[in-house]
Length: 408
Image (cartoon, rainbow, N blue to C red):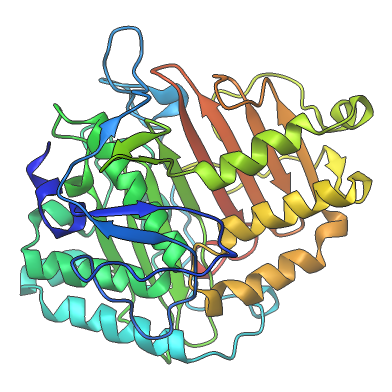
């Protein structure tokens, strides 16, 4: 078990369940929730045991997949990132949903400033960047581990003291719902399973960076990420944004303190049955041509959304429509409820203009399944990738408001 897991962050079992249930408080050894954090449905129990893979997600050679395109490993090179030349200082007014809740912003500012207060001058310089530096936001996250991707900014959790690490995670927790925070922890735990014998994987290799000085009056973005996580939450002034948000997991399930943990279990339990429920006529309308080996709008691809295609939401049964609505909610509500609800309401109002589509065999154990939700604003992708052992990649974007500003 990695030494990092023996510390307080690793002494927790977090089981992700339906968000519509009541959340149990996380154990005191993890952190307490900041004021204003949204409600969720996760449970946590104290544990000193580390995670072990129940589905090891490794390829024929036994090596872990790096999580790049096709799940590459070793010498794989991430795609080149071409940063935007734009330097927006605020979100485009027409793109921002109405947002009147100040409690969550206040709590996030307090915890982010508390984190900054723990840092040395050198660390603070590494963490703080300008909110208007769109190019750095775009090019500082990836689904490759640190050995392959050198563009991550900020500070690594593994380079922080225990107190600094606690403060960093408190800042992250303050902008996420309990369910969203639990998912991030579980994705990092999965990374520990994947890299038990390799230093490039695991919780220590996740980074935190702030774009803009945290304030209730001026916009700023918290970015947190590593191999299989990329969180962007933007707040302050008139800005709210919770995208892009990338998640991945390899293995897709593992054991922690005798419990089976599936970091993307809730999403997969909706995606796979939804595709399976399609009638022959619906399949014909929803099916995309070609095979997808990577996410279309993944890291380093912020522009060039493909033309909308697929099966209209209006052609779904009532049960299927509920599945689509729940799936969108699962992604957006990883952020604190006060932040996510206005965004979710916007997407809900656009459902009649939204489509679903798929390619390949979209089942739990296939290695070529691809699924998409495409609306006027919301963009969600799901990919089963199996080049280095079965694992899942998924992404949520807002076509007009990624990074808190959009792209111009």
